[in-house]
Length: 138
Image (cartoon, rainbow, N blue to C red; front, side, top):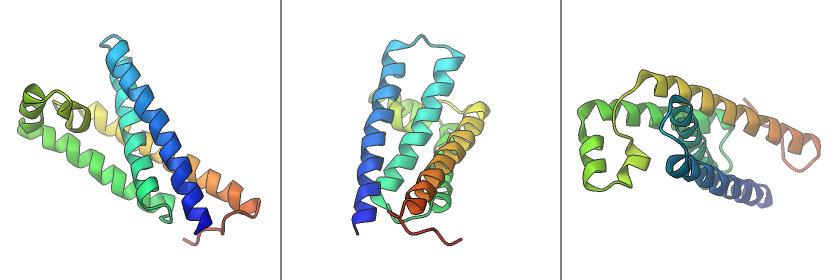
């Protein structure tokens, strides 16, 4: 129980940092390809950290599968035009649903989720080696 609580706490702390960085880029960075990619990557990482905070006992691969599916679904939903209309009516909706479909976003999401899960797995392994977490079983 303590291990899950610790992972949840670390996930929430990292989530706060990811949200802060994402909002900073959204509000302060120029509208450019690099800021779009950075924002997409931080969105995927934040989604990963939400799953870690809600389900701290899940293996990184399970969290990555859920988050990858979420990110792809949101991006494909943009093909309907509904997220753009929602964002026009209520601008904060753009932060969750985006606006228009871009294939590049799919690539960024997959890479960012894979990196987040990889770092999570490394952290769990290091904690296990230090005797604070049990090793995962595949």
